[in-house]
Amino acid sequence: MIEYKPGMPITAPYYINNMPADIYHAYPAASNSGLKLIARSPAHFKYAPKRETTRNMVIGSALHMAVLEPDSYDYVHTNAPDRRSKEYKDIAANYGADKVLTLEESTKIEGIRDSLWSKFGELLSLPGHNELSGFVADPETGVICRHRFDKLTDCGIAIDLKTTVDARSDAFSRSIHAYGYNQQAAFYMDGYEWITGNQLDDFVFIAIESESPYAAKLYRVGNQSLEIGREQYRAALNKYAECKASGLWPGYECANIEEIEVPQYVINRHDFEQIESFTFTE
Image 1 (tube, helix red, strand yellow):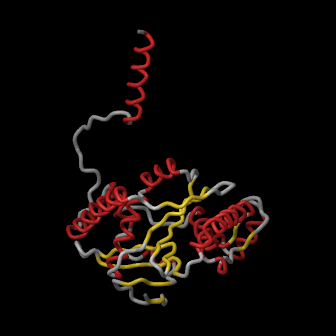
Image 2 (cartoon, one colour):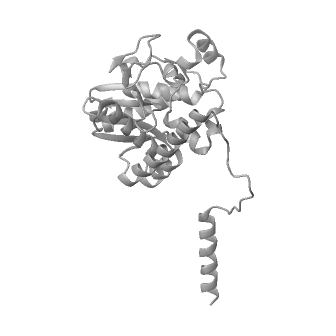
Image 3 (cartoon, helix red, strand yellow):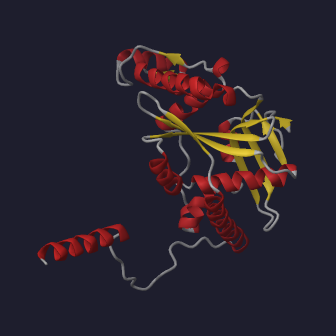
């Protein structure tokens, strides 16, 4: 592991500590988010709009800092009800909008922080490194890959924070599929092994609800779901390597008319209602 220094060359395989997020995201390497775009189509990756800082990203950064680096949580808090108020605008003009939080934003962030530390303080307090950036060549294709742990403990536990509407297992299971968290876990775990030669001791998600009472649960992705995620990132990474070698980044490949149905659950519900209706009539 090395410490980040401005202007330093980034080589692989390395873990780099204290690398600014914008430098990490600007580095031309395959990432989990990029591979999810590749899976949609290479064109969606190649011609994706330039990554811009959104308010959700500002809140996410503030939340991670409040939870994982409370001593560095130096955002300016205001009593402004929203970002349209004169109070907020005046303070943001002095400090920058990405460093100023409204009353509602800071209340929510600190509520989530307090909930997480009250429930998982022992885990969160384990010594380690926050926002740790890894760079390594994929052993199969030679493509440089990057990943960034929310926290990697010295004992080999990766911790990833996820805000969610519903942290219960049935709901968060759907989030895992919808947002590709199983692919992320597999990609990060493999990247760690490529860099260190060792396997992670554990990779856990802390799912925290974004509304009061900020209920939270701790999850480990099951082996079958990890294998699905590994197959997904592997296929996307192979496609990335092919496109990079050929210089061709195609969009959707099917040029013929496809037959399409409503989602399967709608068909299942329709069939069930038909059966129920027939049974009642009889």
